[in-house]
Image (cartoon, rainbow, N blue to C red; front, top):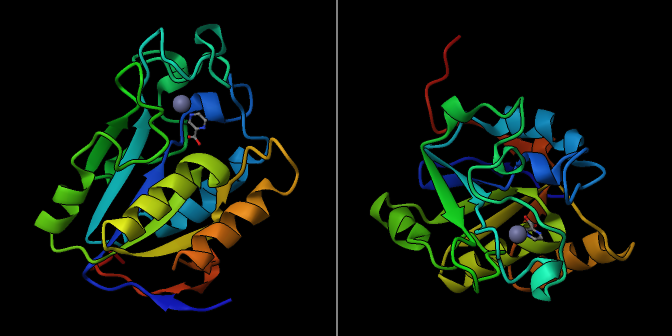
Length: 198
Ligand code: VGL
Ligand code: ZN
């Protein structure tokens, strides 16, 4: 896999590292815990860092009781919607809430948010995407970033998949690459756009 060096016009987008997507949560990604160390290794190295939150109303259309595919998850202000312990929010410049109205599925960090405008305001041209889940919100965020004209780097080991079907992770990575994203490992991300404390 390729190496990539962080530039001043790069931003980091950490997608949905929330209790409900972590082991013990309502929609747990079984390997969710594995992403904490790779994410920690990325935090603090970007000009600008975003963390998204799935932030649903109690009657969200994606919930099975409303006819959707998922169990109730990430209801706004609930424990399940809170960021997972061990995710260092102090290193995040902006939290982006998504899926806040009843009918938007909210997979993409760009859907119904002003993330694209915020990135442009800060002269960001490339985004590094990581978090949960590779096959839903990470994928849709990466694809929308490409559509909005940003270059996209997906940090594979800093993501984990729901894998409703066993091959969903591979399919998602392939789909993102086919659309123009670069997929790297966190160990192959070099440099920093920020002065780091010694
Ligand atoms: C997600 C399913 C439903 C995700 C969010 O964060 O990938 N998946 N809502
Ligand atoms: Zn959701």
